[in-house]
Length: 519
Image (cartoon, rainbow, N blue to C red; front, side, top):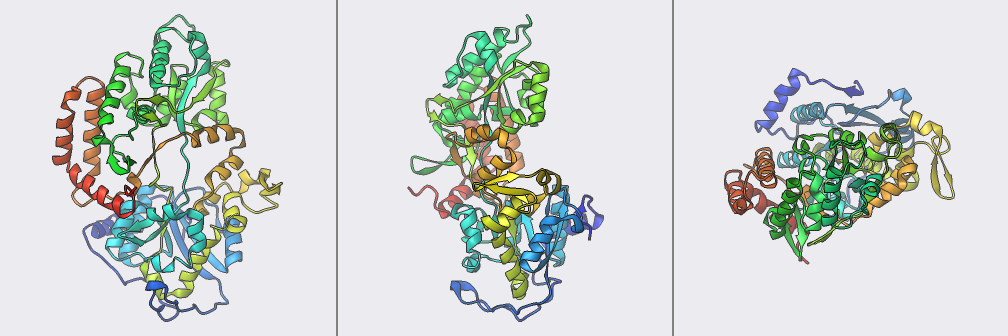
């Protein structure tokens, strides 16, 4: 089997169509039981012990990804296999669409992988088709994994009260407002601490020639579409457009928060000054607006720390203007508090599921559980899949991981084996030691906890159509093409024509079942 695949076959498309058309194929795994079926599981009943095997147990694992070396060059695989008595066969797909197609084909044909990546939509689909193993009865065996990822993370892989997928340990937010400190000095302003001061700085950067070239060729704020204003929404105490979050002990959707319309009014005020990137709504990717900051066109960006502080970008900034000084701004104060926007605590960097058919093969199932637990154990497997082999790729000095030159050369693909994630802050401090102050600053800003990652789209709700309508109408509001007095009419159309009411109701119900809004 090839270790990396990047093309979609006609068979993939055909079989995917069959699956999506509603064909539910269960109990037809090509994997033959190597021992009798396990005993009953619910209620913590004892499971049948798997027979001991003298041969390595083969584990077939698939996921999206790239950069995986050949098996004989894969030092992480070799260490895992030796430690656990397994033979891992990891296949990665550079294209996420290709991965989804291939996974659909395998699930439809009964050729189940032993462990595989799923997103929330796939999780829901396969659970409804009865193809995934309910991990709830295995919680005791999975205790090291559950302790590692945390109880709240378990909820991300939960559906209908049952645990079907292991979500990776939580990540941390990267974004903050960044501002040109040298431009502030030029126009005689201090770093903004409120949204009104932010507006003042943006206008000054547009009107007062901060680069000193005698031309009116700069503007204040840039970013990715309306995402550039997330800290402004936060300053009004609301999440981003469509966010679910807890407020005053209840679950709230941003569109129904009275302060959301006030935030739109302030954003319109900023746009009306001419201090906002005129191409804001066409900034579809980070490089589009990042380069406007690097080249000295814009003085304020809402952006992640890597795209400002990595060596390659520092070099680009200095090449344009050696005196350029970008600094992070703390969360700005506003009428609703002081929040650096919202951060979705329901999303995950990845989730991994086990096929239901594997319960008929307890030896292999136990090995999958051992693998998950091993990469969740900090001093052994977790350290391996983060940093490589101790004494070769890293050393410990006073309890801290110190990389060797070989880490970046030989095991920069190790993230592909981080099936349960990693302790994010500690990992980043090792990998990006020079950027540690910026990482810490971004991660510690106060944020509204969005909950959308826990919510599944109900049947009949087309999220793409709804999002397109939302984007179009919010743009009209902030660019003066539609009056804010028509906001209620916007909501009514969203609820009816876009079926948003069904999504809202389903979300409220699902979040209540997970315990949110019960303070």
